[in-house]
Length: 277
Ligand SMILES: C[S@@+](CC[C@H](N)C(=O)[O-])C[C@H]1O[C@@H](n2cnc3c(N)ncnc32)[C@H](O)[C@@H]1O
Image 1 (cartoon, rainbow, N blue to C red):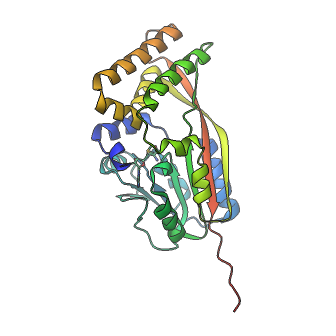
Image 2 (tube, protein in one colour):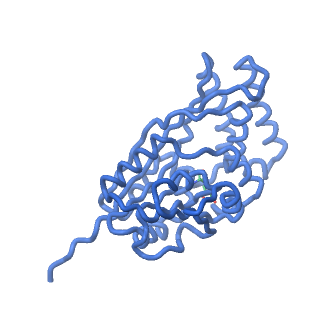
Image 3 (spheres, rainbow, N blue to C red):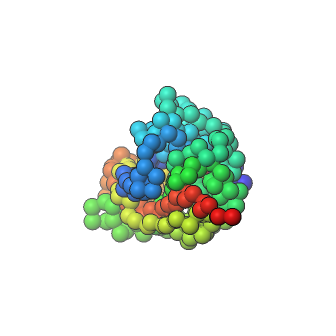
């Protein structure tokens, strides 16, 4: 089910073009945690649900080897074409059956992806693949993003939210995991040493055209478009016109910014205490 939402080649191409890497603020949180809980050496990182590879690439400077995995062949194809280096490999496989040895992973990440996984088998897999003191980071941004542009930030945020309200009708049921700020995921992580961090994740620069592309990369937009192509096009066109009108500009290349709120579940696989006979 989740795989089908990201299968299309066109959708994967939209991903490649309009999705962005995890922000520095999030990476700092993850690497401070890893340093505190485990420390070097950092041999292997696995980025699960890596999509077209933006989130995998940021791990490369820190690890000897990085593996990006995704259930969608089209996404992995995009990742291989765009984000390749000798330290990275990619593979098509489900999050619930990773092609790595027991106890071999220093850091497992899932950026904007964990809510799609089949939770119980994924958590068992997490327990299997992490090294003792290995860490996991399951993070996403929330739909409560805000637009920043001159003195019309509030108006633009309002327009964006109205468009999101229309799209929400086409959201997959898993959206509730994001809306609960990953509470369900935090509860299910099978290690006692765990926490959740919620924070403003800085700004990402877009243009009006880029923002419309980002909107189209939402799985709920793709679901809407498959069901009602004309209505989806009309919604996009209307959103774009309202943005340009409110900003009092005509160029789709006019820059603006989105401010994201992030949630990140972090946990460390603490070695099981030996029970004396
Ligand atoms: C929203 S994208 C995030 C991609 C990337 N990590 C990023 O930060 O842009 C979610 C990805 O999770 C993948 N996915 C969904 N369910 C999956 C599963 N059960 N196993 C592996 N990947 C899965 C989808 O194919 C999709 O590429």
